[in-house]
Length: 293
Image 1: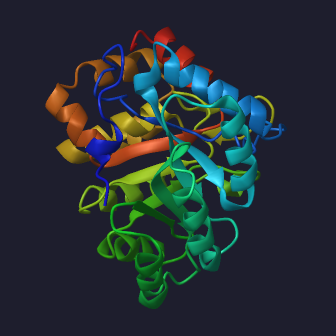
Image 2: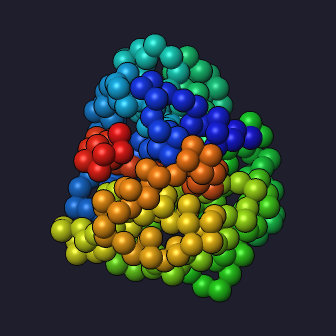
Image 3: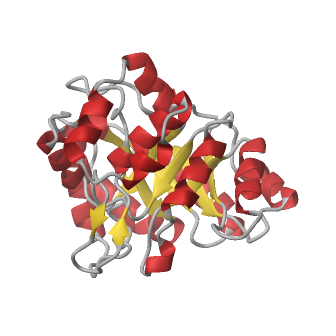
C-alpha cells in the first residue's frame, strides 16, 4: 500500500513539508455546504493540468473522480494529452461491486491515469467481512480510504477497525447541514485515536479555508485545514488540541505551524495525510496570505 510519504513526494519549488501534497483535487465534487455546483469535467481537467505545471505543484495531491464520472474524465484527458499520467483517487459512488470494472478501465488507460487511492463510505457498522472484501477488490499497492459513519458510540471503534484492516480512515468535516459539521470535541476525539494508528487519515468536505470561521453563504462555522494541522501537531505532543481547533487567530496558527521542525511537520503529515478541496487556488491564496508559502 502506498504510504503518506510516497504520496507527498517533493514537488517543484520546495513546498514546506507541512504542506507538501496536502490538497487533493476535488473539483469534480459539489462544494458541500456552498450553493455551487461541481466544476465541469473539461474545466476541472484544464485547471488540474495547469496546477500540476505551476509553481505550487508540490502542494497538489491526486485528482479525485467518482466511478460514475470516470468515462467523462478519461475522454477529456485523452483530448488534453497530458505529458505524464495523472495521479488519481477513485471515489466509489457506485458501490463496492463496481470497483473491479472501474479498476479494469483505469488499467487500460495507464498513459492517462495513475491510480493512487480508492475511497469509499463504509456501511453503518463497518463490519470485518465488508472490510475484507475491500482488501480483496483493491490491490495492496493502492491506498484504500474508508469513511466510517460519524456519530454514535461505535464511531471511533469503526475508525480503529478500518485502520486494523490497513485502510486509511476518512474524516468528513462538513456538508449541506449544520449537523454535518463535526463538533470540536468530535474532531479532538478523532485526532486522539488517529495519532495511535499505524495508518494516516485524510479529511474531506468542509475545510473551505485555512482558519476556522463562519461561511457567509450558509452561516455554518467550518473547520480550517490549518487548525487541523496545528491540532494534529498538538495531539502528538500532548498539548491543547481543542484550543487549536477552536482558534480563529490565523496569525497565531501560522506562527505555530511555521515553528514546527521538518521532523515535527513530517510526523504531523504521517497522521494527517491530505484533504480534498474543490478549489486549488483558494488554499494557495490562504497560505500565501498567512506567509506560509
